[in-house]
Length: 163
Image (tube, rainbow, N blue to C red; front, side):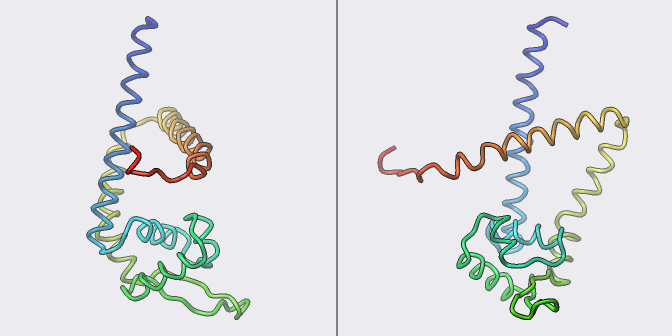
């Protein structure tokens, strides 16, 4: 394979990866709108559905939110019927957060499950070696973004007036 062909493939991979990320972003924005929540709230629901039981402090760490922001988010999502809060049976000074049946139905069953099911059908033709390669690519991409996340979060907010 020529170096020009390899360079073209790498460029196309970058473009396709960027388009994939944009499609995921657009889908999540539409999902948030359909649920009547903002993007941070949607991310909270995703964490709750993955973990089933979470402490508010864990949500704050996962979502990079202050204690006050977590409380406001949980208040919103509880009012909408997407989560419940109750005393931690192991330490009644703590509160645990759980997704509700409504959250499971609306977030998972109605929005994400059809996407996941079709996605499983789409990858059924890949071999174990190909899936290993794809998984490695995705893991490396995630790790790359995680390495640069703190750097970007530490940047001062932009000032639109000075742009």
